Amino acid sequence: MAISNIMSQSLINAKCSMKMAHVQSNAKKQMDGKSNVLKAEIKQDMSSGTDVKRKEEELAVTEEKATKIGKSTMNTLSEMNSDLKQAAKADAEIVRAEKAAEKKKAEKAAEKKKAEKKAKAEQQEKITESAKTKEDENVSDGNRISGTFTSVNIVADGMVPSSAPVETVGAKLDIKA
Image (cartoon, rainbow, N blue to C red):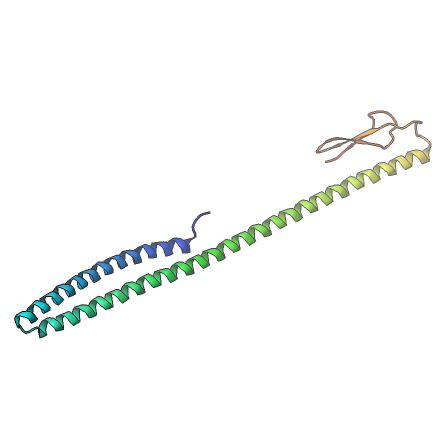
């Protein structure tokens, strides 16, 4: 089964979101690395007695940015996951609708076939009744030859034997159009 347009678009969006999350993750790693360097410098400066206020402020800003980037990455991945779930639900609905349409189409085809079969049976019944009527006419006229012969009905499916009596062999053929 092919992927629906909804699912394919969702997968494309997910790929973009993954790339964005990767870039955000790399930026966070850089911020974390910078924070670690600042922490080490602050420690070293404190041991040497240098003023560390500016580096502590920079560390706070760097850690805040790293936290924001981490949250942004989580939001990006969460949205991507949500979009994929919605696309999967929509795709499942499309599949259900397609299956329902196929089932309905099959039911209609079965009804049509049943109707054709019924019409064919009715037509065969009319042919049989017609043959009986002709037989009854022959019997009432007194033109009936003694003995019963089997006549042949030619139908679209082939030749079908009939038990109707015939005047002469092969003289009476019922042709189904």
